[in-house]
Length: 615
Image (cartoon, rainbow, N blue to C red):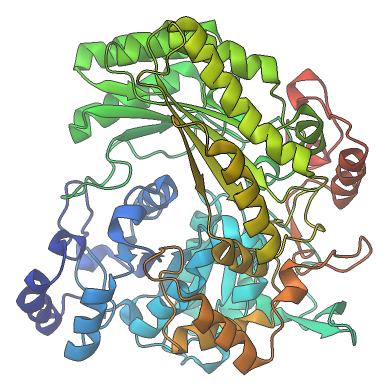
């Protein structure tokens, strides 16, 4: 049963002070939920496969924690990946992976739900299952083991974890998890075998049961055919969305951690989706259509959160805050509310226009933090290819306004390895930084003074469900040459600093992003070799990953560094985002021609979303 195990509790209390940040493992935080065991019929252990500080900052987990615990006979408890120091103790002392709320072994839950937020968590996902005392692959688990159901952005290509999960929830979870628990309640009362529950899940829109599908491959390794082994399994698994955000559940009493987390503040999500259509951006495609919360609902949520938590900072969450239809009124009223509550406010993703600078100047006052610009590419030509709607003049105009108002720190975000990129585009990155320095010097008597410009360069990773999903990723040598090329151009500018991402990490991310079902065994082998926390530089061991691929006969180049055929069956073709494949192909062609696609707010671009959801 899902009850407090005193021997586990004692072992935790005995050992937790031996590790860094014991509060990661003790639970008992403000607003964490414990229910009367007599009232609970179904238990969900909700896992976030990264450190507590990262998981506690994830809004999706907080939302689903509320959704599930709002169901009277369901108890949902949180589970995070232990850091390597505590994991060592857990294995030594035979402490199984347990829930924060009641210190109960995960293996005693009915469902082990795991959110997969980014590709580099793959080994952590498997490690959590192993720590729980279960077999990694679904086919090897016992009838008594909990169902493993995964969700999150990475499950839009579920195949690299398809042999590990019993099922995937594709899309937004607020409504579908209520339906999952309804099906589970019926199944549990029926006393039927586990396979029957998986069949029941196929009746729920957005649920993918991978064991009901088989993949056949051509001699060249591409996918020949995807066959159903259960006739009632859907031909296409269409993502779930919440159409009305005002009526959707939202945590006004979120769990408040004992220690500082990555985002240690109140958070209000003002809308979902994006209309801009950047061709490299997966989030901008998979989260369509745009749905806004009303201004009054947002203010109501903010008031309740601040009263319930005592947070001293409020942050607005969206893919592009400046695109909210009533952004000026909303920001003005939230600023007033924050002043009344003596709370500071952060506003990411505002447009760099006069209103935004007025607001930021008022918020930050004399102590101005850095401003962020994301041109993504160094020339207008390449920005047209990637459909990034920002001009050089907009960048420079924003820089002038910023410097006039007292800012002296600017961050510039770019990508290298983009489709159609040339050395001229790379040189353009340095030129933008140089022009910004010149603008500052014009306003400050020819001196750079306290100016600090940071140029941050990430490596392009082709992602599923984007117009660039067929494009090959650059090799390590190509990335290294491009980094060095930019570095040499920036070196003479003493007030400009260059940061760039590790190409090995980007390579593995590309492999996992476009992987198929054959990768499951490679990920399991990587874990066996000791790979975990691969998104953390101090833990990432690329050589072990290469060894894992070699041991399992997997060629990672096949996934990341070849140009995929437009007529290929893609591993994620079973998953529907409502954006049609034909639209991605058309956008791919327009990119090659350097043609811009207008913002969806200026008129429908016929991506296909409006055939499925209300735009």
